[in-house]
Image (tube, rainbow, N blue to C red; front, top):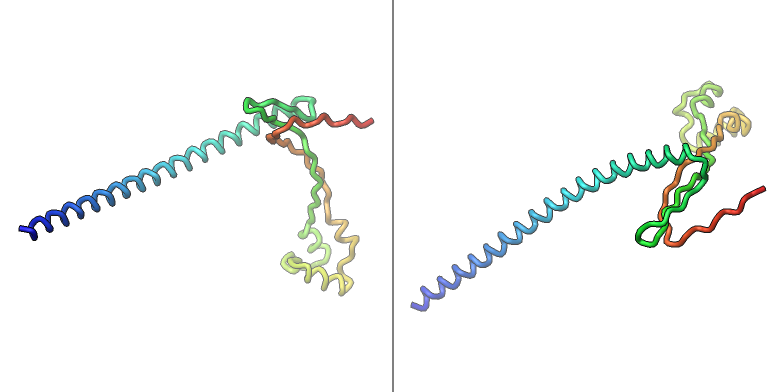
Length: 154
């Protein structure tokens, strides 16, 4: 009789363990589904923010203001400003044509140093094929404190 009771207890333990394992599996499946749903929402929000930023940029470009500060509901501030960047673009193709060599021969600093040592490449050639451009971009950032007004330059 004790053997029968023992087997019944073991079967109950197994079913409880199997039930717990099934529950954990369902919880895992639920978390996986929520994870991918959140990823999808994140992707949609990112696309929406990209479109919103493009619209903000267009409105700001059309306005005469250089910067704008907007208080946010949480006590922080949104700062919209124009930022100028200077960028040097080096035209390897044109330099390779001028030197009458393949563009592949201008990959590493070592390649440039060899051509310089041979007297084929000069600093003037580098300057000639380097174009400096100024890029003005709209920047939108969140600040905890209200930014100070910029001093007007005369």
